[in-house]
Length: 102
Image (cartoon, rainbow, N blue to C red; front, side):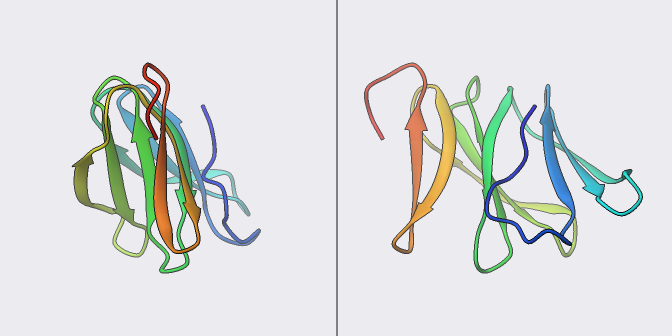
């Protein structure tokens, strides 16, 4: 399990589990939403626009989530073994667990 990086302390926590992403209210520790994500979600990141990006190793994808509606916006191909999503200089970067590409 991991949490999305780059979030503000009062924002809900995002935790990944097998085939799903859980959104947790940090003030009550209650699960607010559970979203299906193919494969095993890995490390995610919160973007300045508020969206959450979650890499998925088995599915080789990155899932973009709108935390306002608790819905998956889209799923994009990310290469073999997508492991961690990070924002740098206005671009999204996804590292590869199984390959040598970024």
